[in-house]
Amino acid sequence: MMQNNPTLTFVTSLACIIFLWVNKASAQNDALTLLTESLKKNVIAIRANFEEDGDEKGFGFIVGEQNNLLYVVTAAHVVRGVDKDKNARSIRLKFYTDLRWYEASFVYHWDKEDLALLELAKPAALTNWRRDCADLQPRIYQKVRFIGQHGNEPNWVDPGLDGNIFQDNDPELNFAIGTIRPGTSGAPLITARGIVGMITKDDMGSSTALKLTQIQKLLSGGGQYSYFGLQGLGASTPPINPSTQNQPVVENAAEEDEYGLIRVKGGTFTMGCTTEQGSDCEGDEKPSHQVTVNDFSIGKHEVTQAQWRAVMGSDPPELDFKGCDQCPVERVSWNDVQEFLRKLNSKTGKQYRLPTEAEWEYAARGGNQSRGYKYAGGNLLIEVAWFTENSDSKTHLVAQKKANELGLYDMSGNVWEWCQDRYGENYSRRAQTNPTGAALGSYRIYRGGGWGFYAGRCRVSFRHRDVPTFRSNGLGFRLAL
Image (cartoon, rainbow, N blue to C red; front, side, top):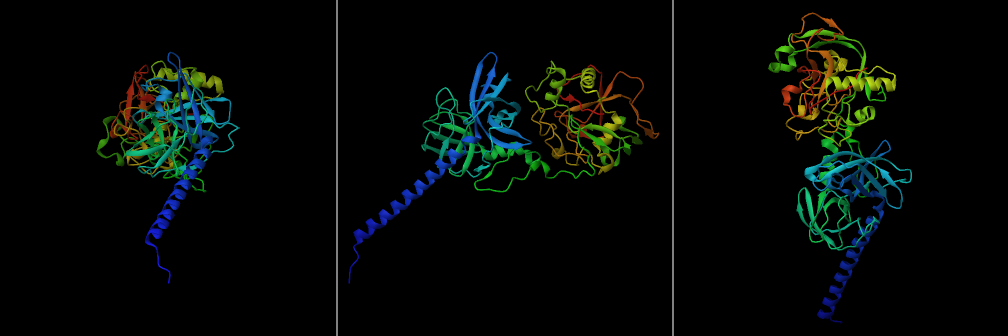
């Protein structure tokens, strides 16, 4: 009978373990190498020009696509300067293997997280990009790579497997990669399971990345909109569009016109202090009374900075929250809006105008599909509006929150909205048809509440007024026709 040699058995077992470990490590490294190479088409070089301070360089990566528009994230300081207080004169993007630079638009920024969102038309040369690349479960001691800067020009280097995540400091990851260099901010941090974060600090000794889970949270707005379209590794089904979730079903919805106006079927409603307003009603909301309005069209959302600039040629001179094309325009007086309307109508040949106060309230309440909500779209204000408790003291992108019964956004909160009418302090008890406000008076009406006001001011029946020359960083408008 042959006897076992304990020493030989131990050596053989150890060799097997080492062999398996090396193979496993090699497989992991190969997986990371292959994944990193496949993600180069997702990564974009960015060059932002600031008139006095020259160019700021960095990287970004694609996170979503809608209607042939690409959405790209980068570090906010790349496109807003080191102190995140500047507006870039131009933002240009360059894709892997493409020699051209493409103009991009700034959409929004989250300075606290050092995150910015950009938008550009999808280049014809970019036939596809990889969506199944999200690692939403980072782990300490994971091996990491990045795709980013090397030398003066971007060349999408993959500097090798020499990095590790050493701390999860939610919502940030701390990691170390010896080959990282300045100019890599905004680049993706990659594990063998996908993109795990966006680099915000590129320092050889200790670098920082914003976790992809936090980016997903910010770009999906709690399920209200869908700039984020990345999925886990191996996913094959298209992502659900969060902007279609929890939205009202709009019966017989009319198509929007070129400026985003929706046709509203006329009807009769009770205007003013109705029962769902409870004890919050102010004196000028009384008495409640019957009002009939004809069919009309009204903006799906407030007029944006980009829409204002397209008509007027420049931003309003006192615009406060500059650099956010899809945020509502503000610091425009009632008189300023009339000049905008004159130019818009001359350009289009149409007769755009401000809504009357009655039209505005009818639309805010949901028109002939009204469910009797206190605010425009619901009884829980945080679901439908940006106001003092969730706005972070600034305006926000239009159409992020839940729409009302007619598919209209932000009729409660974000910015107040001018109406056409003069202010009349007391309503009449008589039923009215297509009222246009007081015949005389120094004040014009605005409605809806705004980012700097509490819930009571965002109710569908609350009224506010000021002189037609008044401007505020919480006051804008929406179109009617």
